[in-house]
Amino acid sequence: MKNSTKRKLEGYMFILPAFIYILVILGYPLIYNIVLSLRNVNVKTFASGADVFVGLENFKTLFSDPTFQKVFKNTLVFTFGCLFFQFTIGFIFALFFSQKFTLAGPIRGLVLVAYMMPMSVTALLGKNMFDVSSGVINDLLMKMHLIQQPVEWLLKGNTAMGAVIFMNCWVGIPFNMLLLTSGLTGISTDIYESAEVDGANKWEKFLYITLPLVKPAIVAVLMLGFIYTFKAFDLQFVMTNGGPLNSTDVLGTYAYQLSFKQYEFSKGSAAAIILFCCLFVVGLFYLRMIAKEDD
Image (cartoon, rainbow, N blue to C red):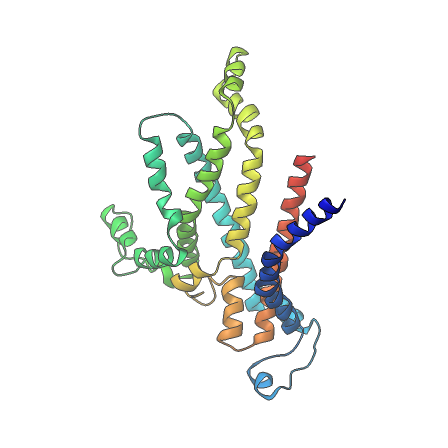
């Protein structure tokens, strides 16, 4: 009994440093941010110390603000647009690279280069690619005679959002391909051979064997992709700075602008809390799905 208690104590001592680190680095800022969102802290009240408790007033103000409504819509459009394209193309790539052929490994490694690049570098690359005067996108389209004059990609709302989605998919497709390829390679070839003996064609094998067996990988890719995309910040911040006219602003960049450009600290904290709550709900949903599959 004493040895068992000693071993438990030793285990707790090993995880104690990590627990303290998480509590200080993550827990304190989160709690402080919640407290800040419930007060009226701005550049005036911060300097004078006259801030007071206002409850949920900051959240009510945000939800009734047309700019916030636009930003929240942008976040959903950006997230689901990226998820659709990067999952679809990533799944096609995964199916392709799961086949055995010459140079499959090296080519797959080259595709992963985009995923290994920092997002800020990807944003700078996208900003140059979609530049109206010297961008390679306009140059390529004009040489193919698809456009007659350069398009101002990052200066118009719809095209700016499309450009940002394109660059995020640039990073997301290799990530999706990597995880889905791992799921596909785990499927035994014996199952496919048995299905062929029973007369199953390629479509039936894909529909009744591949999709059900790769479902855990698909769920993981979609949930992680949602979390990574929904909390996007650096891509929009570097590439468009949320413009033009908030057309590419998402919750992350909008919370930053409220806090550090407009100095509405409490409203910025409230926007960040809304972002956190959305991701928290998705995370709980994902954990519940995993628990059901384990059962």
